[in-house]
Image (cartoon, rainbow, N blue to C red):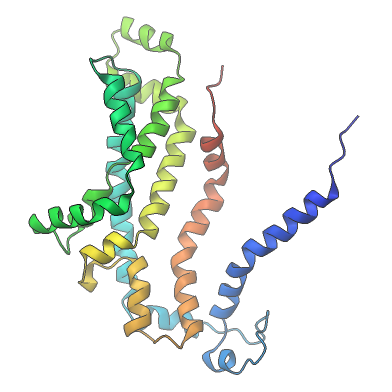
Length: 275
């Protein structure tokens, strides 16, 4: 006998979904309104009667938005790749290798999660400035190449892989790096993909550090490029053009999530290994 679901739950979830998605809908609709039509609305209209692409053209001509995009892609790809290398190796070491003080070192390392990231921003700024790395990609990337949380997440998943697989691999003469590449990473692939996507989103949305360490437009990312658009682009009053810029900047992350949403959920919810 099938268990009946309370229809109030579906009603609540539907209303909640509308509430969450409405700001995105409003952003897209406003992006297709002309400046004059938007200012002529005494009552905000939920639909666009005469859509225009003019705002998207302004988004790329008023400021070098294409350069901001290229900078963000370079920053995101390099930072994510280096972070994955550091995180995977650290998680493997803490989960599989045996060395004196391993558990104590991991506990101390884990305690760093209690330190707010804002507290180390000034220290990072002083360090990067003293190395003369301001307005460089290296200065942008260095503070973001590791994450205690991602190491912890991968370490917990690596620890769930049976020890018998490791011992069998060592008997066959397999090196630790080959075991990591051939066994551990394929088994924990959902979590690795989740970490990768979350890091891409984090890099794409990064604002405080890029804003602090760069004052040269040649190194602006899309996040601090929005502020440049408002200040020196088409102005604060041109809301449709601003919304068009935000749509363009948000689109890659939305597409990324739609493509990998199942793997993201599987990686976060993964509690064990398949038998």
